[in-house]
Image (tube, rainbow over all chains, first blue to last red; front, top):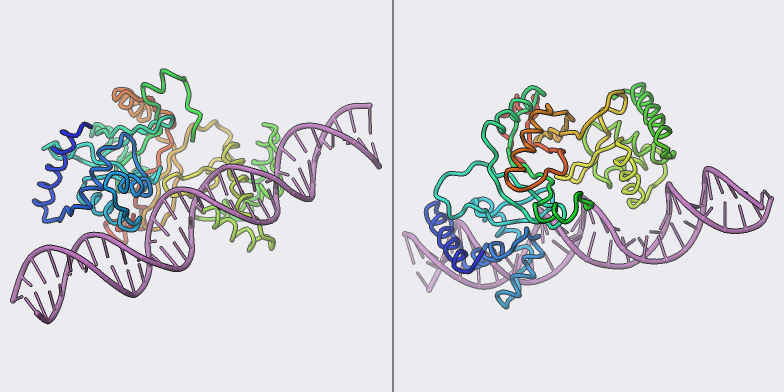
Length: 160
Length: 160
DNA sequence: CACCAGATGATATGGTGTAACATAAGCATG
DNA sequence: CATGCTTATGTTACACCATATCATCTGGTG
């Protein structure tokens, strides 16, 4: 994402927080900016490092976790449970409403694409789960994939 | 699982390992037995504790990880990536071939059900992923659910 | 200004996982 | 049975992820 897009996205995030009565403080905004500038999901400690590089002041890991919680609650960021990493929501700028996102994670280069799976597929999944006697609570999926670039390079994925 | 079933399953596991040329050593078998006796997925350190309780001798965490790797390679156990926990494969006794399993995880009581999602649903998922320019590498899904028992008690799930 | 609530900082600690190297146990062969 | 190879297990140290707890700061309100 280029700097112009990032600024536009940060403005949109501010507007969204104003609308919901949440306070997007300077540091929370910086953490979001770090995520936006990253091409890949970051761990909380990655963010700590990047933050001090980008802003010239250290930030405690504890604070980063809290800011990530905040951002996730405001739907400005997501957590990848399978990787213990975080990324900015890909749709902060979009005006339309978004359901629970799904993530395609390249197991080779760690690139992540946030997509919205067709609702009928999610419904089918929900029905299948119901048949097994469970209720689907969240439709956030994290799928182990290979991105096009990496697929071209090698036919299989050796990593975890 | 009752003791009789466990013994039967352990025998099946032994047979499977013999067939594949893998060595199901006594300790590996014990780790598998710990998993089989558990109603819930266990962390490696849970297994360390339970192992020493059940067998009266301590086992290093490192060894448990290695034994879990072994069991996972032999398809005798699975790892829940979203929870960093492990469980015995539910189909060690079954004779038919099994594809990649899917897991329904109760976010309230942590009970897990291992199911096989209909192949056409998986295919649809694979196609959706392909449209997004990715290749699905693993069809192991870990779905955040509420089991029937917990759903009866409360309509929603507050936990992570 | 005094107060309160929310945000952030500091410290400590626990859980998860692996790297690197040492030791022991099974198994072939001469 | 001695040798040596391969595999399994033990030991130690360490890195990373995450949270609990308490302290401090900041911004807004009366």
